[in-house]
Amino acid sequence: MFELILLVITGIATGFLNVMAGGGSMLSVPIMIFLGVPGTVANGTNRIAILPQNISAVWAFYRKGFSNFKLSLSLGACTIPGTLIGASLASRIPSDQFNSILALIMVLVLVVMALPQAKTIEQNQSPSKNRLIAGHALMVLIGFWGGFIHIGVGFLLMPALNRVMQLDLVSTNAHKVFIVLCYTVVALMVFASQLELVWKYGIALGIGTSIGAAIAANMQIKKGIGPIKITLNIVIVAFIIKLLFF
Image 1 (cartoon, one colour):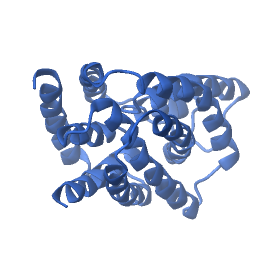
Image 2 (tube, rainbow, N blue to C red):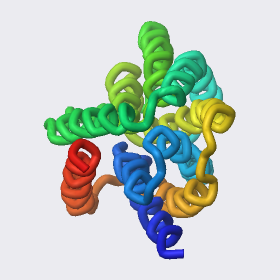
Image 3 (cartoon, rainbow, N blue to C red):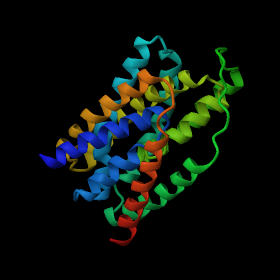
């Protein structure tokens, strides 16, 4: 019971961070490894939690009037080929190797999180044809990353949508959660067919992520998450040490 409560609490933080910017899965995947789940299985099980998180966020954005499902769906569809390849590859990696890869990725994401963030572009005009093409092309690569590991995918999606396609920040987040929802369905199917996922852990996390995602989508701002990011960084460093040396 304690494990499930811990996972629900972790899920709330994960869902909130994932919708606001990204990096939440750097909590959910390692916490399952700490609970004894093999790394590869934890990576797949995490997709169970990501699904309700993004359903909740998509619904919250839709209720607030921030949705363009036609564009979201076309962008999401472009992630599918990459997702199939990435998830298939990830499901075949031995867990000990996966833990080392996960630690390296977490270090890289920590570096990205520490970099100064570029100024966001706030505008309501539609992207130009060239920017639409570039954005859709990037989705194929992002789909591979999302299928393979998912961790840090928000730090890829945000620049692609906000900087390349020049969507305003709220629209960027609305599209982001829909895109992640699209490729997560595919990734979960691949992992479920290849691995024995821990469904009770995934569902417990999913309860939390759906709550956290709804809170983040309704807030629509980034204020107040500074202390959370500091705590996240401390926890991530501890996870990296555990993955590499214990």
